[in-house]
Length: 597
Image 1: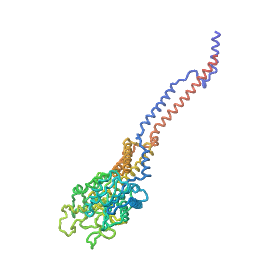
Image 2: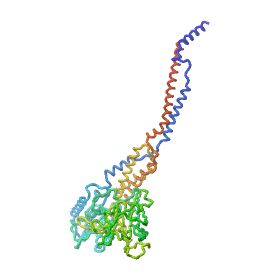
Image 3: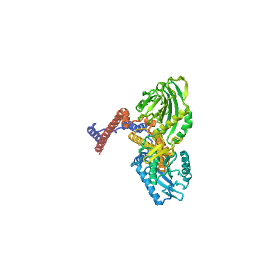
Image 4: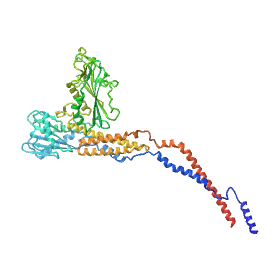
């Protein structure tokens, strides 16, 4: 009984010292805490899935390779190796020292004629000179030339024959010794007691025949090498980077249009199929390594011009001047952009034959010096060319039936084609005449049935390769900056492959350029530019499906932020409550143990 009474007294004392604010007799449960934490953890576990659902796929791009290409193109302009050899015939034998002095003289003159600034696509700072004296008694050569001339072969060429025959015979003699890599250009000087004649062939050689001294020959040779073979026969020593009318995809569409101003007067048609098959085919084949060219044609009616003309009694014709040319094309009536390529990145060059109405026939173009234009046509850079063709006997006094459908004669069609070819050459940055006038005198330039000579095609290839690589580098650098500035931009795997292939093609073009393989370099550079443009204008890049991280946060935060904030606050409150209740329980246990002891 005494022990029971003592226990009762201890319980009474514990009950008396129990404070419900700081103690509790039962162990706190974890059900509420577990439930709250499970909700919080479910949110935390769902966050990676949410982040994955809004993740943007970005194929890796070779940013370092792009920067390296841009740095190479900027710091080291593309240079092609060129070889020049001068062959002297009929000058007698020379010692090796005399050849060295002549070679040094030609080299120095060429260096003085080239631009002081290194031009991209030229060979002004990467050329070599070889000199050969071929006489009856001996043959002396100076300079490294892997395509060495075989002594004595020039003597079999008859320089008194027609220029075309001489050109073909020289190609037969010299063409066999040309190497497949580095291009060599040759000037043959034949010393004869006659008036000096200078001709530039359609291949890669020229010849000077007549009574000429070695000093004068060196001056003419260096000028032909520099101004003709090196710079394409242009008077200016300035090479423009974007002068050729080639589309970003490496394609050109030649659109030929026959415009009947007023079909109430007459209706003309043309046999364009014959032009395309017999005349244009060699031209398209020659330019194939520069661009992928396609041809189309159409005949349009009711196409009046926008400018005015005036009647000239002295010439008996209507006259329009050079000042009227900007207003000649009537864009409202001339529906020329009907090609399927008009909406793409291909370049369209328009060539139009304008047939005036009877009230303005004949219609002639007056040039600034007051004379009438020989071609009666003009060009618009990067657009195309126009020829005004007045029908024969086009006076209103004739009693012929104007409504009869007629065809342009074969002779007139041939003349129109020749003017078109001259305009096409001008659009490509070349001259349209057959004369070269230099400081030392003039020279005749032989025309090629392909419209472009071999040395002109070499020049265009070098410039085209340089222009394409520069454009490729600029496009890839712009793409690199764009991608790095927009972390949420979609970069498809196809874009990554296009960029890699573009860099490979650009590297191949640079390698071919260093070896002097002009055509291959131009083709690779065209592919590099086309792939770079395809990557930059890929539909996925132009899409609006990508957005910044700030935009993503603004879209999802109104929903997730309030809910997440309440869940986090509830978890913190429940955790704090659990710790407080556990502290109360531990306090009660400690006091109970102290009382029991």
